[in-house]
Amino acid sequence: MLYDMIVIGGGPAGMTAALYALRNNKTVLVMEKTGFGGQITYSPKVENYPGTMSMSGTEFADSLMEQIIAQGADIEIETAVKIEVDGAIRRVLTEDGNTYEGKTVVIAVGVKHRMLGVPGEQELVGSGVSFCAVCDGDFYKGQTVAVIGGGNSALQEAMLLSEVCEKVVMVQNLDFFTGEERLRDQLLSKPNVSAVTGAVVKSFIKDGETLTGITVEHTADGSAADIACTGVFVAVGLIPENDAFADVAGLNDYGYIDSGEDCLTATPGVFVAGDCRSKTVRQLTTAVGDGAVAAVAACRYMDTL
Figure 1 (spheres, rainbow, N blue to C red):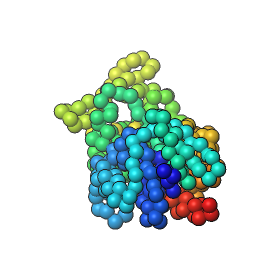
Figure 2: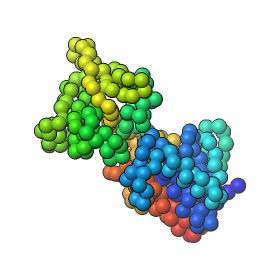
Figure 3: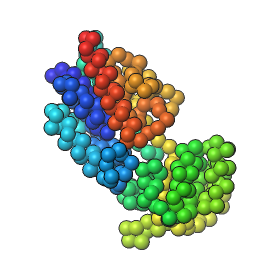
Figure 4: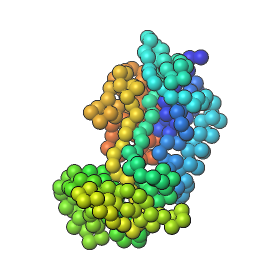
């Protein structure tokens, strides 16, 4: 079957692209390699999505998936490993050896947060371990949190958290912060912000299933110290998963697909949406916005065929 659109990625951006294409009477295949919903499923509460007071990330993802299936989307749980261009046809090859053909392709594979690799970390995601202060900061109002990292992202996360949390403890593995000096100085001048440098997180401290702190190890002498906190915000980088599409989409130095707000790529008929493209704001609202833009652009492209 020749689809009008193949969407690679079942997160908010990809499913929104599918929805907009389906509403334009296009045939759509959505491919997802693991589980639908992407990073938003790690958020136990989403309270910054316009028009919705509160919902879980999983509820949002499930609702959007049900919506696109009801509109007629085909779904495949497969990993795309290559996009081939053959005239007006774009072929998506998968890890399982299958090939799907479409007139257009939307790449919406998102990113994954770089994790600490500490035992028990995955189980605490959404229940003590978070990645987004904008999304989850208010849940720790009046509490003590730790921010892991020392770059601009970590400093910015800590700055937001310092406005709502009683105390913010920065933990950086180097002896210095790599973020902007002015931002660092502004943050550390706050009375409720402190820093522990030259230290790495070795373990999480729990009371039953509740996070109560972390144990850090000082790299200089191997000494350990406990830090009491009810939340840990990990800000040690994002990993885009675009390598398979570098030959058709064009990647920047950080591995993101080099595309502007128009969601176009270096290859006609191939579009990008969501966190995997080069952008400065990565939020649920910007992801669904990208999905809409990419789908409309794809539909306009198909009108020229």
